[in-house]
Amino acid sequence: MSAIQIPSELIELRQSIRDFIEREVKPAEAKYAQELQETGAIANAEEEKKKIRRKSAEVGFYQLHMSEELGGAGLSYLGQVLIHEEVYRHGSFLAARGGVLASVEGPTPIFRVASEDLRQRYLEPLMRAEKEMCFALTEPEAGSDATQIRTRAEQKNGVYILNGRKHFITHGAEADFAVVFAVTDMEKGARGGITAFIVEKGWPGFEVTRLQRTASTVDLPAELTFDNVEVPASNVLGEEGQGFYAAMQWINGGRLHIAASALGI
Image (cartoon, rainbow, N blue to C red; front, side, top):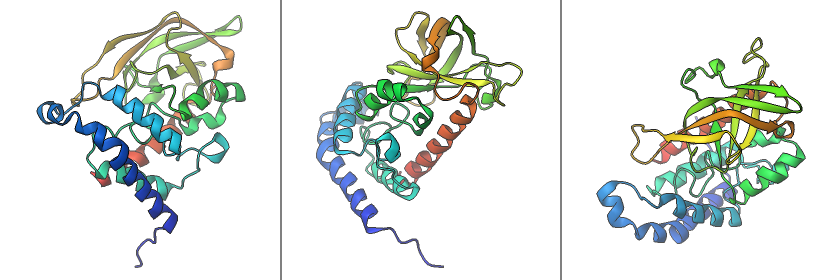
């Protein structure tokens, strides 16, 4: 059985990622060598990662996975595996998880169903690493079975009234906005009754109510609460009722990157 032949352009891309980490990430991380050795983390990691993300976006690495239609490079799945493996191969704290390459905070292919208005207001700043987001799906009563979410969105007078609670939301406290999945038709449920909304931090009724602990020493996911939050109809991401399918596509893409990262480790 013949081995996979990696195209030369992907080998060059992998080397470019390697050079970027050596040039931009490792010197920044060296300043925190003692803290990393003593605690296994960097207290100021988010601020440092923001700087790295913006540099990565400027040279085009941060949005490599996005389609050309959305302003990315349309990188193949093989290419995505190679660059995620490369990032984690270095064992760099600042390069990983939303450092050099986008993670939950960054641009996602789910925006292919977004209106032109939503792309301009939310996707374009994400692509430049000027704004950050989070993926708000998991709930206390709906963890691994996302079909059972209870957050509701009812349409009244041209807006959606959002009520519910999300928990263990990665990057929830830091995000400028959340992509929130809510039930818009109880009878249909996951089969055409769950809709995706873009909800901005600071809107009345939207609060980060607490940070939550996990087995990780570096992640502090958040609980998000929505109390009669008014969401404009223009902030529906895609078609009403199609949110669950979009969420599953998003998760599947994440699985590829997680597996590739494990190869690097």
